[in-house]
Image (cartoon, rainbow, N blue to C red; front, side, top):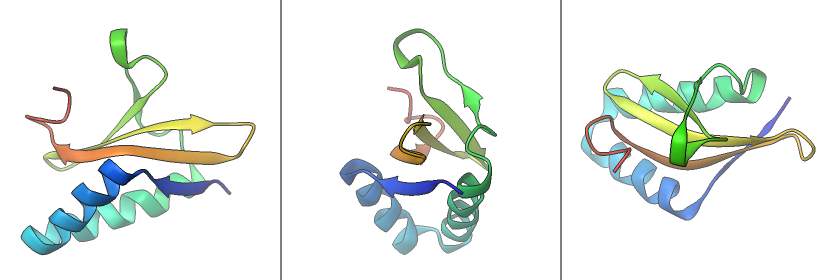
Length: 86
C-alpha cells in the first residue's frame, strides 16, 4: 500500500474545496484513498508535465506523481479542470 502525501499547494486547495463544495470534497477524499491501493489509475501526463498523473474526479483533477522506491504518492495540486493545468 502506498503512502499519500499532500504538498502545501494541494493541501491549500483541498481545504478550500472542503469549505466550498462538500460533495466534490467527499469524492476527492475517496479518490485520495483509492490512490493508496492503485496509484497508477490516473492518466499519465505529457510534455512539461511528464512524469505526473491526472486523476479525474468529476470536474476536478488531482495532479500527482508516484515514487516507486519510497512507495509514496505526492499530491501536487487539486483543482477544477479549467484551471489546473495552467
